Image 1 (cartoon, rainbow, N blue to C red):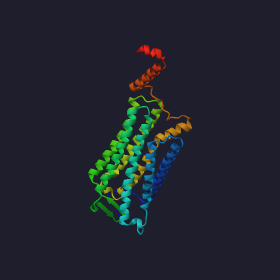
Image 2: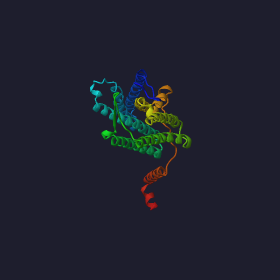
Image 3: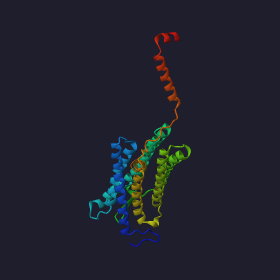
Image 4: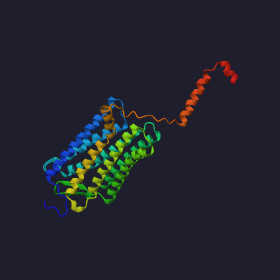
Amino acid sequence: MLLPRGALVLSSESDTLLKVFITILHVVAINSAIFRFFYRKSTQRLGWDDYVSLLSALVDCMFFALLWMGAASDNSSLSTISSRRIRYWLTIISSIIVVWADNTSILFAMARIFRFDRQMRRLCNYLGIFFIFLCLSIIAHVSVLCRNDSKWIFKPENRIRCIQSEGYRIYFTALYVMADTILITIPAYTLWCCSPSRNQARLFWTGLGAAIFGLMLDILYVVFLFAPPHWEPNAGVLRVRTGHLEASLSLLTSHVFFLTVIFYHHCRNEDIEATEESSTITLTDVEIDSADFDFESRSTKPASVRNNDH
């Protein structure tokens, strides 16, 4: 097929190698999530971040399977128009769920680090719930956008696509940039303004690096999301491939806190999750301790002394 001038060139051999590389990333990411879940379960340290990470891995299994379903022959039942349309829907929805579940898992993991800072722990948990609603809003947006048959393009090279408006692409990009900004700001603010403990600092430096790496992945995907028309038809293929790269690497980066803990535990014999408790005592704690002390001191007085006090 003669490509237009300025179009991206992607040979079948290069595409196959890219799919194999993406397959390896998916397999490693999924197995890491499963190992993480059962390791935390065996050590009785399961948290919401582990459950969300496992959910992301389960959805990523479907996303990974869809990658190779596109290689079905033209005579296969997977190559009919209705099958390709269903596969496209599942690809879009699963990629969105995986990326946003990974972001949510990172926030819940940060909340575990703030175990002695109630306000920051609540903030991370509330932001994690907020991310879930953002994920649902993106799915609802694309569902409304592609509900009409007129929005679909059927290409002769066995490809199908829903036309995404510029407004949707801007909305999609704005939410991803906002999420990356939040994931970068929390560890950066903690490191430079809150004087965390040594163990907390190690974890937050790891989280900051993972958040910056996630931002780079989102930028790569957005480049192909706003690809000019003359980049087609291979821009559509690379858009799908970068979506798989983003999802698999996002799932891997969501394990950075867990992997850091494992590294220090097995290589340096340190329990880095055992962060030092803050020595700050709130007013409520002081009042409760004082009340307990007064109650105990009065109860130990002889009855005659207590009567004289009155």
